[in-house]
Length: 436
Image 1 (cartoon, rainbow, N blue to C red):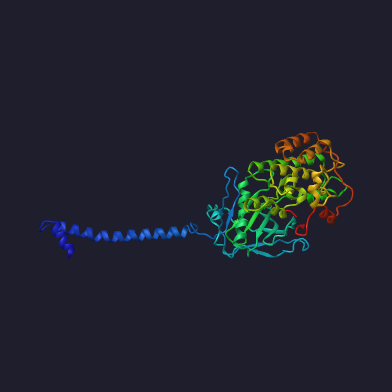
Image 2: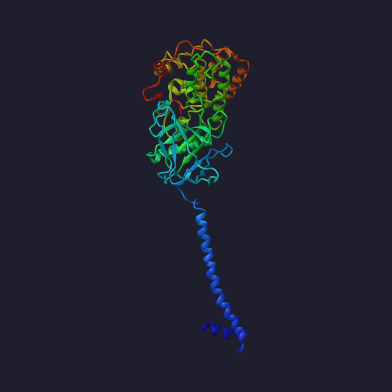
């Protein structure tokens, strides 16, 4: 009735065509509005089904290291089934106690990630989360036992990697520290003589940091293998020229860290990794990260560092510095030329400061040239201000490399006595025998 009344109001009496036109408009508008509402609702539902990852936390992601220019840690979301496993590969039982074991990657979900790491860009869809082929657990030398993190050698995307895995029962503090260390490494940026951070599997347990693997592992073990005479040329032969080359690489990395306002504080052969082509890369950055994130006095930090590699001022409970890193670098060169002898072998660690205060220094090794020993001696000056800057050390090493002899292979008499080494190096029972 209302429709007809409206038509009567809009049309002249007796104008039938006008009345029909008004009535048709009112009948058509209502279905059009209903159809439009249905289409909008359908579009919203389709968008929600096609883009489920937006704003959803708790999905597995890979946080990839970006070039130094970005100076930040990025992450990429992975598409993954509800449960995915890392399958071990066949290996001799004596080399791989995890043979045929599976490391669960899909459950449980970690939903209380710190805000620092939760906002991550979506990973490209063509990059899928491939399985790791586990090779063997990595033994731990010269670091305190850490029940929260395990290390494995593995293969990923046809390359060798190291998996640093956080236990699934880790608490919030351990998860924060684990991801914080990965962020710390990424923020340091890229350098040819620092091990590469490939990425971090995060947001699902177990959390895994994926690092570049260097075939010959820690330099100290490599130096000890160089003591073995294999009766011919081998990868385990080292010459004085090689010492200049590898020393220059480590010094370059150390200088770079100082440029990033990072004091290493843990320089030594145990903290250097050696690649297949004998490239040396500086590692052992755990103490540097702890100093950045944990409040404490220098004395409280002694437990995480080996005292015989520390400068006199650090032994006197002062803060580590660029100059103390230079001192430790001189000790590293001494380790290299002696093929892994401990520093100050006849002096107890607790007596080392008094020994140095009396003006004592390390003696020149028998097979050490004048040019190399002059660098070692300059790094070992008692007063911090008398030690050279790293830029000068790098320049001297590069100059020495050009004139160094590359023919005679360095040898030392007698096999290595591990127990004697641990005693002379000042390691306590709190330390376990690798690197990383």
